Amino acid sequence: MKKIFKLSAILALTAGLYSCETYKVDAPELTAIGNVDGKYMAFAYKDGDTDPATIFAVVITNTTDNAPDAGWITITDMDYTGLNWQRLFAVRFHVDVDAKGQTFKAANVEVIEPRTAWNPYIEGAYGSYGSFYTASYQWGSFGTTTASIDGKVVTDGVETPSGNKADGIEFTYTLNYEDGTSESYTVKGQKKTGWVEDSIEYETWLSDNGLW
Image (cartoon, rainbow, N blue to C red):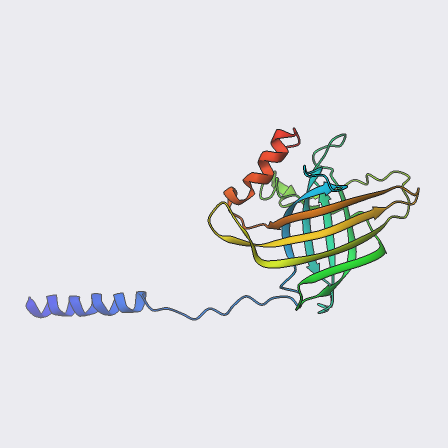
């Protein structure tokens, strides 16, 4: 009986050692602009105002050939006033990227209006919508539109409500429409962390302004 107990104890100890064994996990592979790309939520200010005009959902992605000095930026205006909430105004355009310096910029580049773009407030909800909305074109007769942008990403530049840090994003941004009108913004925000409390500042602002 003692031999059986000893054998059981040895087997249990051996199993415990194996169950506690750690395995090396490789770091996730980053894109060539991995220090810049990602999903960000940001306040957008007009003409030096201290109160935000709106909130932008910003996505920076690498190019299809994974160029180290270029990318795409998609900017979605979360203000759906006058629009269906599933049909927000978004633009997408090419940017030059300095991955090491974590900066991005463009000067008077033509923009497109994407048919899909990230909406952080329906992410993972509404069935097939997932984290994207299906866009319908909003521009009407605006015609060719160009954008200029000058921005940077700061690693761990924001202290979040969850007590962690997130990458910060800052940029100046102008849309120039074919009819001669333009819109300019100063934009500041943070990378989406996935923690609900880290988005509360943006969600509260949208709710207080009757937008979401």
